[in-house]
Each structure stands twice: as structure tokens, then as C-alpha cells.
Image (cartoon, rainbow, N blue to C red; front, top):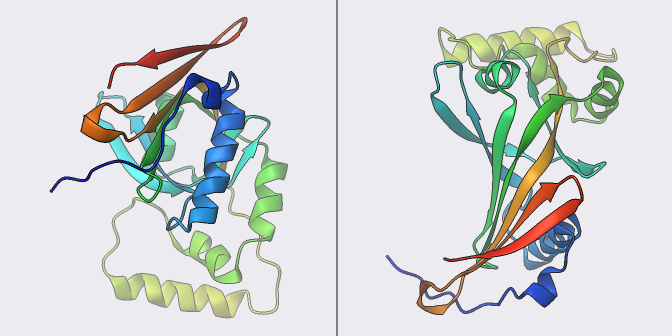
Length: 206
């Protein structure tokens, strides 16, 4: 299984000196291209035993130059972040033959911001957040469905409050790498590292 990457190039001129501006441009192009869930990103965490774990979450905004997502704070990822808030993100857009790797630190956003977002979620997703003790063992699928149905009936016609253990994180990036597939596996890799004076740009060997 091998793919020939011929779609585009990434030069220093097109990369510029602001990785967040470049991210926004690439993200817009991924949406325009019709990439499936362009806001889907891998989130890697490490637990207290040093075991890494990775899963897909959804980017919900680039707020104050930080990457924001939402989850259950008691989940495996939430517990990992509580113990070690250094995380990594990865976006992969195969139609554009691009990926973006991000390293940084994750911190909880304010309760007020989380409540604002929770209020505009689909009602089924709100009930789902109440239903699920994320990452915990359950006896069966039927158990979840029965609990979901019970909570749906309980909160019928009422405003659903945000669970205390649910909310958002913002990842403050310390390193961002842009990857553009090229012919002969001589891919373009341009990395930005955050320094006190600003972003340092470097080209990396593929």
C-alpha cells in the first residue's frame, strides 16, 4: 500500500512566521476540500506510570491561540492530564496530503466557558454526558440505553445543567509542525517552536 504525494508544496514563503495563522489557513482549506470531520484530532496523553495513550477528539475552537476540546474530567484522558498536562495533538487530512503535529500543555477552561458551550450542544449529547461515566466499566449496552431513556424522561421539558465533571480544556502550543506530502518521500516539514521572543521556524528533514 503506497500513495504518491503530488498535491502541493510547503515553502518557507507560504509558511510565513505565524504557525497559528498557517493552521487557520490549512484548517479552512480542509473544510473547503470536504475532508471528513476536519476538526478530528488525535490527542495523546501519558499516565502516571508513563504509559502513553491516544484517541480521537474534536477541536471546538482556536480560542486565544489555544486549541479547545471538551470531555469528561474523570475519563482516562482527564485523569492523565491531571497528573501530567503535557499533551500532543495531530491532525491528518489525506485529501490535502497534510498533517499538523502539536505539542503543548492542556489546562481546564473556566466553568463559565464550559457551561456556555454545554448549553448549545444537541439535547441528546447533553443527556449522553449525564449518562456516561466515561472510561468506567458498564455491565452492558442495555444498561446505558436504559439510563439514557430514564434521564431523557427525567429532564423532559427542563434545561439540562452541565455535569460538574464535564468541561473543556485548552492546549497552549509550544511546538507546531506542518507536514506536506511530496514525491519520493521528500516531504516538506516546517516546525515552529515557541520561544520567549516569539516563534522560531525550522525546516526538518523528512
